[in-house]
Length: 111
Length: 113
Image 1: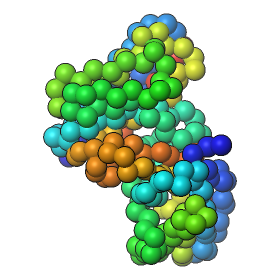
Image 2: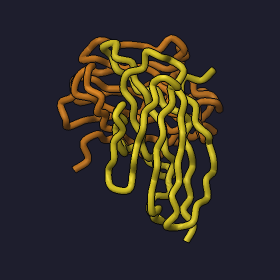
Image 3: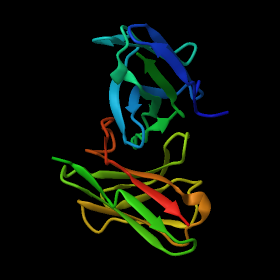
Image 4: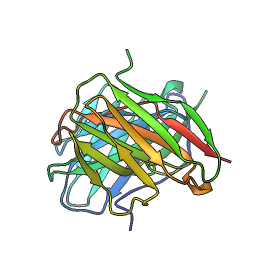
């Protein structure tokens, strides 16, 4: 079983729609959670951290469910510029906090 | 402005010919990481340095080596590249081992012919 699993998509969504991604992680000891965005042939960039209480950053909302070991990302009022691959990332707080990535979910916003 | 710089952006090497990828940083971060990302796959950690301490991932092939001569530079050496080593190689840094904030370089895309 992969440590971090995501639906690879692709998700093709009309501009202005709301889209949601889920991600599951296998290690219950995971402590920190993130969503990264990766544009085609570019490096991953941090989109937002994910907290147990849930957090929002503009049109983006992230949620964490520790009991079920899943993380979600909601994008409202999607823009063409949101087209990218969204990577779910977890870490273990064992000192050296290496990032463990999911394979990513490919999102394309259609005009 | 680039804080983590990888050179070159694109590298073509011959099957079996040693190749070195470089990464430099202006952030004075203690930790430097090398990730391998194959097409449509997740970035996979190969190894990282905490200062001068080298930490190899258990499943990183012996074909991959790394050097960190000083805080600013880190190199990835592939001793005998195979076709399966074609990938994007990402360098990242973090301030210390407890920092969750990584800064990635723009990557080097390696093609093996």
